[in-house]
Length: 388
Picture 1 (cartoon, rainbow, N blue to C red):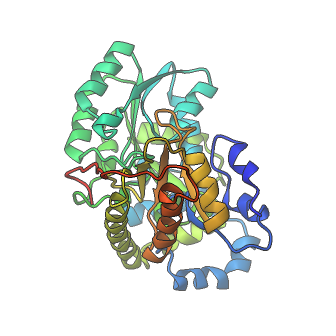
Picture 2: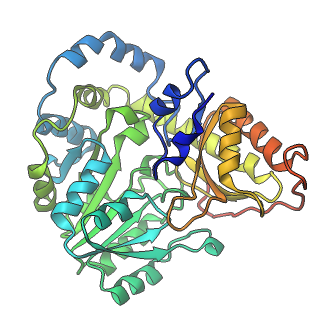
C-alpha cells in the first residue's frame, strides 16, 4: 500500500524514491508529477552510462571550470558568461545570497523556490498575482507598473511558467528587460525553455550575456530527463556570472553530470527528436483532457499541463485515488501560492500512460459510484494562440 502520509508531510512533492519505499511489493507508479522528458536519454545512452558506472562512481569529477567549458562549447556560449550548479535550485540559492539585497518581485503562481528562498533569508517578496480569468497570462505593462509601485529591486519571471506552462514571446521578454534596465537584477528562469515550439530559438541567454543586470537560468535535468544528476546553469555578463561562479564549491558537479555534458554533442540529434515527440504528445494530451466535461485545461509550452477540476471537486482525494487505485502519481497544487487544490499539474507523457490517467480521472470525476452527484455539463477550454 502506498503511504499517503508522504503526500501530506511537506510543501514539495515527495521524491520518487520516497514513494517507492512506501510501496514495497507494488509496481512503480506512472509519474505525472515530476516534469521529466520521457524520451531522453535513449536506451542506448543509458546502456553507455551503465557500462561506465564503476568509473563514474569511483573517481572524482573534473573541476567545475572544465565541465562548464565543455557545456559552453556545445551551446555556443562564452565560458566566462556561464556558471554551472548542482541543480538550478543551488543557483537560485546563491543568486539570492549574493545578488538580492532588499526585495524581489515574482508573479504567482510559479516555481516555489522563487518565493520561498528570498523569504528564508529575510528579503521582501512582492508577489504579482497572475489571474485565472486571464489564463494566468503575464502582462508586461502591468508587471512593470507593479514593480514600480512596490519599489522592487529584483524581478523574476519563469518562461514557460510553472505550473501553468504560460509562455511570454521573446519580443515581450526583451521589452521587459528594456523596461527594467535600472533594477539591480532581472532573472529569466528558462528551466523549461527547450520544450517551447511556439517560435524558434526562443531563449534570451545571448542577450543576458551582454546586458548589465540580466541572468538566464536553465535546467539540464528537466530538459534531459535526468533530475537525479542535479545540474543546471546560468548565463549572465562575465561580472555577474563570475561572482556566482567564484562562490560555488570547486567540485560542486558530480561525475554523472560531467559524463552527460561531454556526451551532449554526440547525442544532440536524439535530444531534438525527443523534444519533437514530446510536443506531439502535449498536443494530443491537451486535446484529450479538453474533451472531459467541465475540466479547464490551460495552454502550455512546458512539458506539463495545468488543469482545473470541475466545481465541487478537490485535487487531494483525486490524487490519492489515482495513486492507490490506478498507480498514477500527479501533482496537486494546493500548496502553490496563487492556485488552490482544485488544480492539478500533469506532466506530458506517452499515450499509453495518458490513457491510464484518463481512465482514473474519468472514474473519479464522473462515476456515480464514487460521488453522489455525477458532474455534467458542457466542457470549456482555455485557448492560447501560442499553444502547441
